[in-house]
Length: 448
Image (cartoon, rainbow, N blue to C red):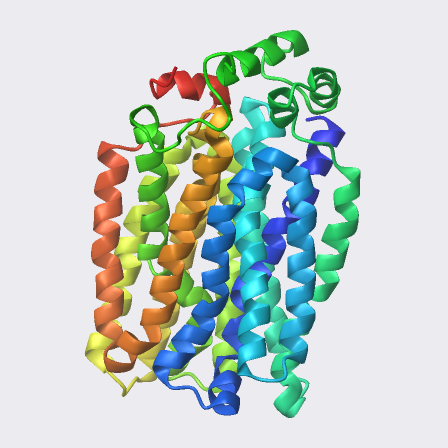
């Protein structure tokens, strides 16, 4: 791999690190938010989902600007959103201001979930694309672990009522680094070709590498895929010829959240307290969840281009079903009176769950969505997939504390049943995309 390709991937994937940190950091603050703002289960769910409303909006609106202004230039805007959100959430003067700044962070997360993997997919040769796009997921997971660990460390400093403000504020440091390093990476060659800036695209391909070994052949492949004499970057997206990639993106994004993964990310300490853990132990167990997530994501990253996307999804789906089923059984069996054995069972089951997610859906989703749309509509397709993902995340995160308050067993049993549906979808409908150029995937899906 060429140095420019590796460097640009790492920097673009910093958007994923902030995405993960921003997503998970609130997990350590829910009990503070409940007490300071006097929130019921309903309003706690709404407060947690507040950032996700921004995420949904950010995901759905970023596609057009990414096509117009370029992938890298939009990443600059997202870095600023992250920075303002971190500082603003830390200094929030009331509940409404806190919601506003979390909403801004959500815009950054939603936009980054679209643009970071799309940018990396567009600069990467096919033989490296899976593992390089998966670097975004690795950074998401690293960001989640850093948030969990940061929360644990700050909680141990006994800062009292300002503890939660520090938990949010520390995100400002990586946000500044992300903003500065973006000046050092190139523009997307596929976006440059779409803008008619072929010489600039040729220079980027020379630095990043090609699928064919010939820059001229690569340029020709991209131009054929765009086919702007017969198609337009503004042509209708929701039409018959794109129905297959649209349905694939929507289904993988829906199933991702119907596993309950974001319920665990946002409420991990709360879940462990429900299962009998004391407060400090709950935060430490959450760090264990983040560590397991990181290790299995690293494992998936090394094998995704060898095993393929579909095989990882199969393994992950089976792990989901077993671990969620065991968690539901534990809550049905022990209710609100957990023994040490019951608490340990929940911990082990959720570690298996996070391992299954990291090795399957977590590693595959952003790679798969970034691959299946033609060049001319990729930004809008990635935007749709991310919108679906975050809309479902908001729904899951808002409803979890309400349902779990009545029965932890019901909610985890529901997630397990949904993962049976995912397993059937993977077996029957999901295509394999490993080792195929973006332009060849377009042809494989029957899109002219």
